[in-house]
Amino acid sequence: MDLDLTDAQKSLRDQAREISLREISPQAADIDRRQHFPLEGVARLAELGMLGVAVPKIWGGLGLDTVACTLMIEELANACASTATIVALQNLIVCEPILRFGTEAQKRAWLSLLATGAKLGCFALTESTAGSDLDSIATLARRDGDAWILRGTKSFVTCGRDAQLAIVFAAVEPGARNTLSAFLVPTDSAGLSFGPAYDKLGLRGATAASMTLDDVRLPVGALLGSEGGGREILRFAVEGGRIGAAASCVGLARAAFTAATRYALTRRTQGAPIAEHQAIQFKLADMSTQIDAARLLTWRAAASRDAGTPLGSQASMAKLVASEVASRVASDAVQVLGGNGCLAEYAVERHFRDAKVTEIYEGTSEIQRLGIASVLLKD
Image (cartoon, rainbow, N blue to C red):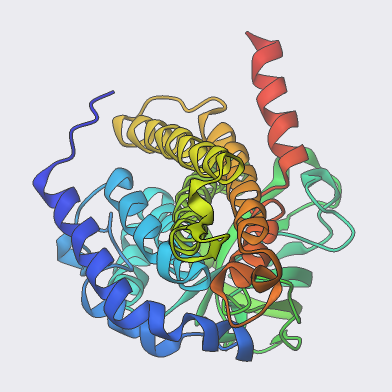
């Protein structure tokens, strides 16, 4: 793997860093406190092409790659993990599956709108009774002449209430393993509705809600990929989502580490900065080392995806390590700040809550370990 970044990758990273410091970071605490979907900030990022990093330029994207996308997401998460989550979703879980599996008509209809931020997307897979068990998905799609009719309920649909398009997964036959299919569903479709936004522990700006599909009627052309091809689409989207999540976790961990370091250099006890205490130095050294390790795993998975190399468990490894690093680093940052780390006026309190959520979303740490083990045991 080549660790040298291209000029285009560096340029996107630096642009994301600049706008994050200038425009995203000052809003982060308010976004979290009000559970406010940062529509204005997302629109600003859309102007810079950051919602369609891998989308070809002819459709309004930047025509770059996954590595570039992870660099951008890390910088955004260093400022606001909620904003980074939204941008990662739009890029890796909505745009890229349509780019990879969509028909020409579907690409023409949606990619330009999504890449330019004229429309936002969401991803509807999870169900309250199914969890990660795809064979238990209860949302059904039935063919009715020249239409598909979808019925069911999804949970934890991130960005759903603010999205105009949903990628919805449904089984064509109840309990049949090979009938899972994906559909492009406009969120203003008759019969589709969302519940109230969940009151979440962290990533509160990346609002999520349940989705109900009450006999939603779609044209035949709404099917993404082939009938029964949902598992392949899901695998591709989930791999991208986990790489994006890992990048976000690295940026979040960086933010917590930076806050802890600055505090340690300024907080004094017995006439000296607490950074001079070996116990604090050990924490900071571990934080920095763990962040670099998580970043390298993330880059490896992103580079493999760009090269078309089968990822195996690389995306799961990156997401597992990065999310647990983010949680550990954020926890240690709270410890370094002591009582102040428990106050909402200090950013590490928000980082601590956001980091815990990263161990759950895009597949829990336990699910990542199961996936990694399954690959190992096949070899």
